Image (tube, rainbow, N blue to C red; front, side):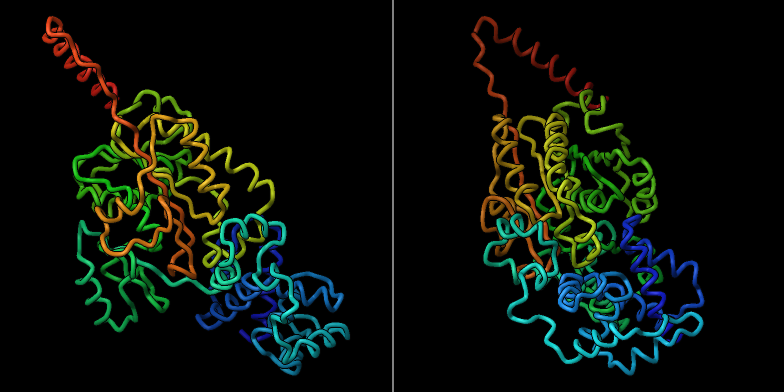
Length: 465
C-alpha cells in the first residue's frame, strides 16, 4: 500500500470508530481480516495513525479549534501527521493527491492548518489540562478527586502504549524456566516488579505460534490483574466463585493458585463469554472449574448456594478508566451517564454476591477503574450497609500471598500506570465475621451437638446444590 492509501484507510476506520458501534480493536481487526493484502508494514502504519489520533485526540481537537477547523476524522489525522508524526506539508500533499485509494487533495484551509502546526510545540503552556492530558473535560472533577496532584503525570502515562504482560501458569511451568525459554528465542522481556508470576514483553510477538502458549504455560494478563487474583488468597481445597468471570482470565489465575484442588465456579451473565473460556481452561489444565451462566446478578443459583464459599471474587463491570493505555478509544466513548449509572450496578452485584460468602470467608472487590465513585466510595457504602463484613488491610494479605514491599497507600489497593507501571486497578478485600454461638447449657450439650452436626450437614448439602 502507498502512504496515501494507508492514510485513506486510517481516515475511514477513524470515522467508523467515531460512530461508536464497536470498540476500536474490533473495528481495526475486522478491517484487516477483510483486507488480507495489507502487509505487516501496512498494518503497523495504519494502526499507528489510528491510535495516534485516539491517544492524543484532546490535544488534536484543541488545535483544530484554534484554527477554527471542522473536527472530523480527516482533519484529526492531518493534525496528527503534522503535530506528532512530523510529516511535512510536501509529504502530506503527495499522499493526498486524490488518486484511486488515496485521500482527496488538500484544500487551502487544510494547507494553512498543516503549515501552522509544523514545528509547533504540541503541548503549549496555556493548553487546558484536559487537552494536555487527553481526557474528556467533563470527567476532570472525578479524575482530580481520585488522582489529586498525580493527575497530570497519570494522564501522561495513559497516553503511552502498554506493554504485553504474561502470567506464567504454575500448573504447568515456573517463571524462571519460561523466562529462560523466551530469552533464548531472542524475545526482549523482563520479570514484572510486583507480580511473582509475571513477565513483560517489550516487542510484538505472535503468541499463538509459541509452544509455551499452545501448551498453556503462559496466558496474557496485565500485571495489575495478576495482583488482584493473588490477593484473593484462594488456596487448595477451598470453594471459590469468580462472580463476573467473563472470558476467564482471573478464573485461570485462581485455579492455578488453588493448585487445581477444590471447587472453582466461573459465573457470568454473558453465557457466550463463558463458552469462549472453555478452550482457555482446557489449554491451561484448569480441571476444577465449573461454568455457571447467570440470568442476572440476582439469579436463583446465588440463593441456593448462600454462605457456601470461602472466596467470592467480584471483578465488577466499570468505566474501564484504568485501561486507557490499551483502549484509548474507550475514554471518548465514555458518557456522563455511565459514571452515574455504573456505581448502582456495582452495588447491586456486590449485594448479591456477598450472599455466597460463608462466615470467615472473603469478598474480593476489584475494578479496572481510577474513579473513587466506583472504588473507595463503593466499599464504604457496602460496609455501611453490611455490618457483618469488615475490611482486611491489603498490607496484611500482601505479606501472606506475595511478600516484599506492598505498594498500597491505604487498606485498599490502587495501582496506576505512572506509579506502578500497570493498568489502573483497584482491589478491596472484605471478610464476613464468624458467627458466634452462645455456649450451650450442660443439660442440653449432647442434644445441641447433635443438632449442630445435623444443621452443618444440611448446610453443606445445600451449598453443593
